[in-house]
Image (tube, rainbow, N blue to C red; front, side):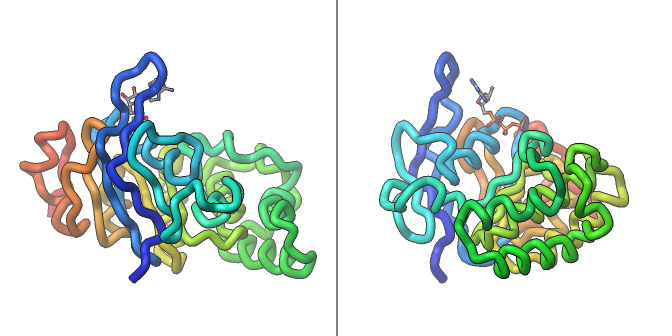
Length: 240
Ligand SMILES: Nc1ncnc2c1ncn2[C@@H]1O[C@H](COP(=O)(O)OP(=O)(O)OP(=O)(O)O)[C@@H](O)[C@H]1O
């Protein structure tokens, strides 16, 4: 099966900072759902920002759909395939209505009107946003904002959806809804979260990061219950 994204030995250092990524290699296949866990500061967000070109590695390389990032026409093309949703959902919403927010990406890509309309209707329905479709995203609840950000990402038909702490600000009911939505999306996904139960419900494979690199890459069912492994990295495993 071909890879949606492949990182080959990437390293990165922030200005004035230490090494945030160190020789990190990882591949994700089409339709594969992968959890990314690790202690705070392990480099999860930094890694995600490399996958759609927001940051560039100082060494190593990233391939999207089997082509190095530099060989894609431009960075917008990469971001069409690899949709990143931010930890702070407010950073992602800027249009005057939910409808506009979902239409923004497809419109920017120059899609014909009927296709844009179809994408908007499809994702409004999937994320149960019809009732708020004319409201400004900034006036919605945290759960609804999260859904709008996901709908806007999905409207561009990405091959890989990257979610950074998607359940951060959600109450129980909205967290349950999010899990159902994510399980139903038939595309590759990478989810960074400290919520191991969410990771175990949505993903089949899980990588553990520490100090900017991958220290374990196993089936989610094994890794999230591995008390001795997770304890080494200051994390608490799930209990059966
Ligand atoms: N803008 C920045 N400038 C300098 N150092 C940074 C910057 N952003 C992150 N870092 C450092 O890079 C390392 C990796 O941070 P990153 O946010 O990627 O980790 P993380 O695993 O996503 O953490 P968390 O689970 O808390 O979200 C940390 O040591 C962090 O302090």
